[in-house]
Every structure is written in C-alpha cells, then in structure tokens.
Image (tube, rainbow, N blue to C red; front, top):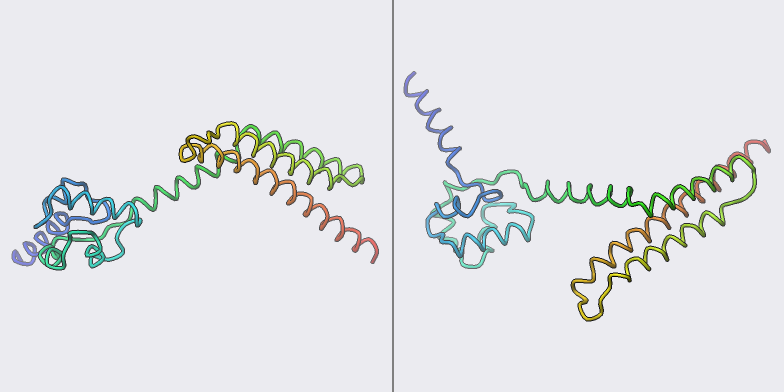
Length: 195
C-alpha cells in the first residue's frame, strides 16, 4: 500500500515539474538540457508567432533545436492550454466592443435608428436616407483615419487609418443592414395584407 501511495505521489510531483512549452517562462525553459538563453528566446518567439505549439515534435521547427535535444527532454516536456489564444480572443472581443461604443459610431447608429423609427411609424420611405447616412459614416471614418496619416512614416500611420476604417465599415453595415431589414419586413407585411 505504501508503495502505491509513493508511486502516486511521485507521478503527481513529476507532472508539476514538467516544462509546459506553451506557457513556460525563459527561466523554466533554461532548466531543460541543451537550452540556453538564446534558444529559450527563440522558443518563446516561435510560440508567440505561431500561437503556441501543437505538438512537442513541433519544437524541431525552432532554429537551433535538434531532434536530439527534444529526445533528451521528452520526458520533461508537456503542452498546456495556450494562453496566447485566450489573450487574442479576449483582445478581438475588446476590439469589437471598442467599435460598438465609439462615440462617432453611436451618433450614426442613433441617426439611423431615428430614420428607421420614422420609416415604420409614418409609412414614408426613409430607406434611401438610412443607406446614405451609413455611406456618410464611411466617408467620415476614412476622413478621420487620414487625419493621422503621415506619408513620411507609413508604417506607424497604418494603425490610424485602420481605426478610421473600422468606423467607415461599421456605419455602412448598420445603414445597409437596417435598410434591408426594413425592406424585407415591409415586403412581407405587404404580402400578408394582400392575402
């Protein structure tokens, strides 16, 4: 019985001492055989660029890591859940909410909503105006993006343009989407009344 408990404790302790390729720090990677600071840095760079390792054998794709190094460390390595993917998913959700709650986008959504309300309540056709407001938002977004553009520093100016393009496309999508929904619902309502 004591041997069985000892084996369980040994197994559990060995699991906690494994180096997780997908989350290990430089210090943890340095504990592996044949891994110095330069190789540890290359492993982390590869992991960040490729959204973690899918298998331990993928480690051979890192420059300077031979199959022999992998073989020597195979019992010390494990693959944990990739924290980079979780961070990127959280970031993409954050970016989406940033677009939704951008003050300019909110203004255009309010204008489009008012026009849609008037279209439904008055029975007058405001779908053309709704699309026009969405297109106007496109030009406003492009204009905003171009304000931060510096032709002498294109690389660092790209982010400014992309921020403006988010507004541009968002307002167009909302305008065209609302106009399409109104058109479909009014057509369906007309067909129902005719029957």
